[in-house]
Length: 220
Image: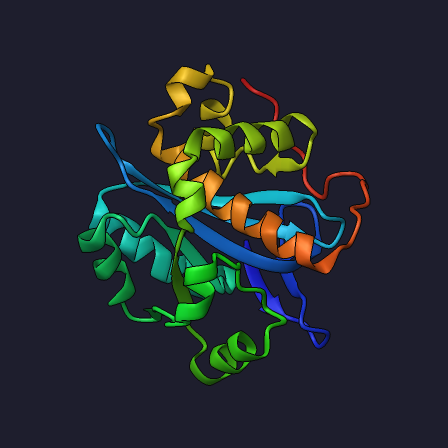
């Protein structure tokens, strides 16, 4: 897969079937408790649904390297992380092409950044980097509720997973709730989908439901 900006500001991604347009493509990183960390790339399509496009599991340095590469490959604009792990977060922010957008009023009020905000648009045009953003405290402190909400979206068919590129996510979302509470995979997914839902709510656009633009391959 490869992405490029279009003249209307949308992002075109070359998929396994054809080129499809996305409003935005963001990433999420889940820090591990007992297993490896996890990084995922999620696109918000123009129909309102979400597409899991890419994933990587590994240690901090591996996730950092993958985030830098994925930033250029998918034109990722924001990467959401749990800021409570200050060491890991600081490391990610110092990587080439990644940085922290210090908008203290937004962080304090927990308002998500959207690509239409004048400050963010100007910042992106000047730097062409992906912004590492801390997940709002209200999401981190009420993670179980946030997880339940995201599971509801998945059950409604609002998340399509590119199974070849995201086999770990495909396997994980089928596990019982108790197994998901400490999963780095689900944390990364919850961080980025919660942020995307928040930005979409500000736009007030109802989703349309067309056919998927790629098909999951049959299992052997």
